[in-house]
Amino acid sequence: MGKIEGKKIVITGGAGFIGSNLCAYFLKDNEIVCLDNFSTGFRKNIVSFLEHPNFTLVEGDIRDLEVCRMAVAGADYVLHQAALGSVPRSIHDPITTNEVNISGFLNMLVAARDAGVQRFVYAASSSTYGDSEGLPKVEGVIGKPLSPYAVTKYVNELYADVFSKTYGIETIGLRYFNVFGRHQNPEGAYAAVIPKFISLFMKHESPVINGDGTYSRDFTYIDNVIQMNALALQTQNPEAVNQVYNTAFGERTTLNELIQYIKENLLPFDPAVRDVEVVYGPSRGGDIPHSLADISKGKILLGYQPTHSVKEGLEEAIRWYWENLK
Image: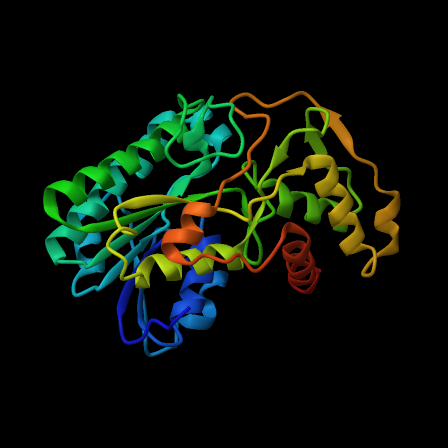
């Protein structure tokens, strides 16, 4: 994989989990504009960048078109990560999820189009597969959405496709599959399962699994996601643009297996974790039982080669959480 240098890259949601990791990766050789309203992101994720001469923070909301225009002025690329994530959050408050994830997304597309941005790479979602039961998930075969969040992420793909065809802006969507890693927030009602479980084990509190633990996911380490974003920005293959790609490792891990891996990696730091029990609760509305990505399209068209399995990612992530949460 080559290096992207000397570009102006706008990263929306740049203070969030994935966005801050992308800021860190691209800041070495490029000018970075981070656009964030800190509704789910954190200043601590970007505090080390604030004095960097190539880093600019625009504190604002993607629901404000003028803020979007200001952020993308003179930009070469946009990495659009800003969104209200979480299926349960969207079920609780579909209106705000829609405003941020659809209206905000459209604002960013319009601003990028008008600013002459070369390429618009955006965070899509595995939730788009909805009630499609086939495994592994292949980009061209989706079902009906199972949550308001899934609806919004599918609409993003539709808008991106229309903007590519109508206005000529290059777009690439990355359907993230259960991303985890450093900077991911373990607290709050809508925390992702991996950081939440790690944090609870570290506090010797029992995590609650929704269902019997046999549900499975294609858990994807952050470094694989960074690689896909970099490949999406730099590909010169005309067949590779105006597409969506599964962004995953391509293996399925059950929640019971996940618990086992987390415990194994925490034991060297804290042997008492061995005695923390798991509690099983009811299944969660809007959840799909199993998720597994076919990543061959990304391999063929972008040259994607994931570097971290779930086990390798957990080893790095748990070390980071131990050093930063204790």
